[in-house]
Image 1 (cartoon, rainbow, N blue to C red):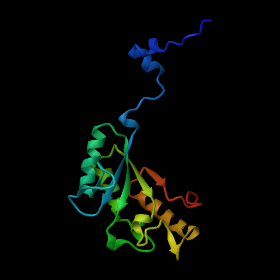
Image 2: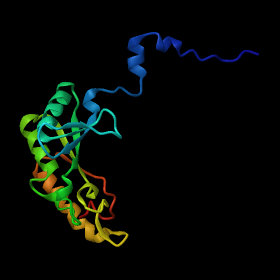
Image 3: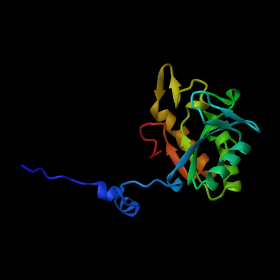
Image 4: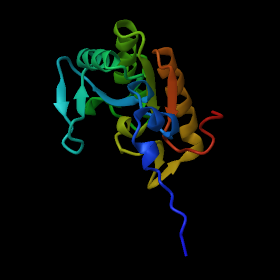
Amino acid sequence: MAFPITRPRRIRGDARLRALVRETALDPGDLVAPLFVCEGSGVRREIPSMPGQFHLSADKLVEEGKALADAGVAGVILFGLPDEKKKDAQASGAYAPGGVVQRGLAALAEKVPGLIRMADVCLCEYTDHGHCGVLMEAEVLNDETLPLLAKTAVSLARAGADVIAPSDMMDGRVAA
C-alpha cells in the first residue's frame, strides 16, 4: 500500500516562495522597546534583574530613543523609577506634571519626534508601600484608586504620551 507523501521541501528551497507563504515577518517597525526612566543626569545604570536593560536619566533616555529610532524601532514604553524620597501613599509622583516619566516623555517628544511614546499607568513604583493603589491595612482599595489612575493617565497624555498603557488592573480604570 502506498502512502501519500507531502513534500514541503519544494517551498523551503526558494526564498521567494518562503516569503510568499510565511505566516510572520518581523520588522523593527513592529517593535516597542521598554525603557526605565529615573531621576538625575548622566545616569545609565544596568538593572541587575534584567541584564541588558538600564535605568536611564532623561538625557540618556533621549540618546537611547535616538538609537532605537535610527534602528527602525517604532516606539518605546516608559516605566518610571522616582526618587525614594518622592514616594507617598497617594502616588503623587505618578501624576505630577514634572514627574520622572513626564519629563522623559517631553524630552523624547522634543528630541526624537518620530518615535511613538507609550507610558505605563501603574502606581506601585510611586507609592511608599509598593502597591498599585490606595491601601487600607492589607487591602488595595479599587474605587479610591481610580481617580489617581485617571489623573496619572491625563498627566502622561499632557506630557506627550501617544499611547496610555493601563497595566494596573483595577476594575473600572478605563472608564475612569
